[in-house]
Image (cartoon, rainbow, N blue to C red; front, side, top):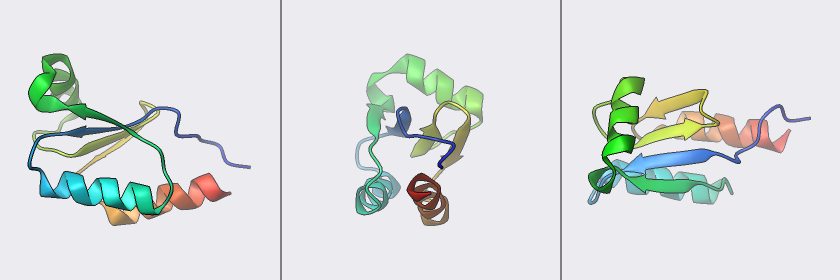
Length: 85
């Protein structure tokens, strides 16, 4: 039984972000649903991402407890494996 779900997987992004596009592709390929928040249009989200310790996009946040920055295929695949359990 999986101990997590992706009811609140969010990708914080910026326009023209190559790593963001790669992250979307990896999530799509692994069948992981996600929401997108554009940091260039949301000051509150930008402040939240900074509080998490990130200064660049993408930032992936899973259920508000797990997060990472940049394109991380390894973490995306680990997440997909956990969801498949």
